[in-house]
Image (tube, rainbow, N blue to C red; front, side, top):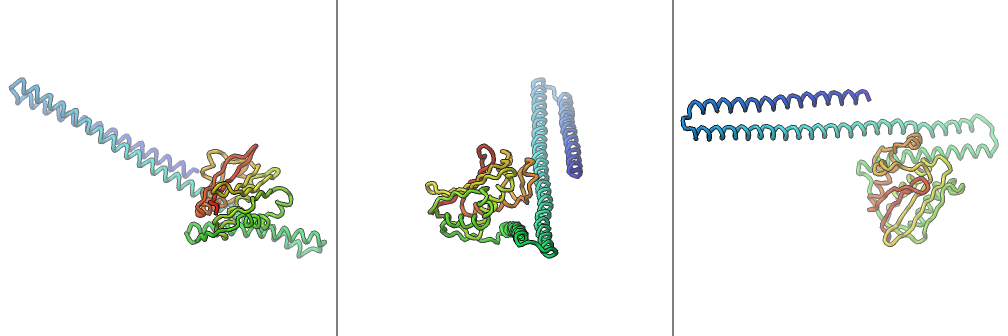
Length: 324
């Protein structure tokens, strides 16, 4: 932050110096032009005998002085505008680079924490199993927790690797007609058994819905949207995944009753590394990759994704795909 303030101060001082020099240069040019015209008027007065010709010559010189002054001021104004535009673009690029650097810095801090947490938890559970003789129910519970943390770690690594492949243009989307109702149900039952059993997640899938999807990447849309909803629903979790066909569209909704998204952030949340700015979302764990991946995959399915407020609170992420 100090380096940024120092850079802005230097840029401001430099701009102020250039502006003052420019104004002084323009003033000197106008003054010099005026002096030259005055000297020419004196020469005309000395060399011209005819009164009528004298008045014409003086009028011509004064008109010339006026035109040259306008030309100097006009060129100076254009130069000043170009200078201002250049400085604006430099500042814009600097701000963009600073924002990206800060986002990348936050990402590396987040990813380090996200990687260490499941590793540490799994290590502790395995050490407990190794060192102590436990009842079978406790052993099974520890094994289940270790598997959960392992799955969490695996999903995190998958997201990072998938982002890398998407950015490098190495991922190839192979869209095929799929029975989306069955496909979505299978994905949710595979990854969210606990949430379904507890009632935290409700599945509302219309039967017989078909669409063109890439089977290798489409699950990431569902898992990232549900994980995002779970993450930002700190109180009682009430999530609903809805799939339905509406005319020529397939609509996939993930609704939550969480903390919601600021209006100013709704257009930014699908950018890489971006995390929403309210305090509740800042405190939650995350890398800023999930929604970026979702947006990228939806775009490559020739679909659209949007977010709007839920009632009475929370958010609704809505994906539109073409029905087949």
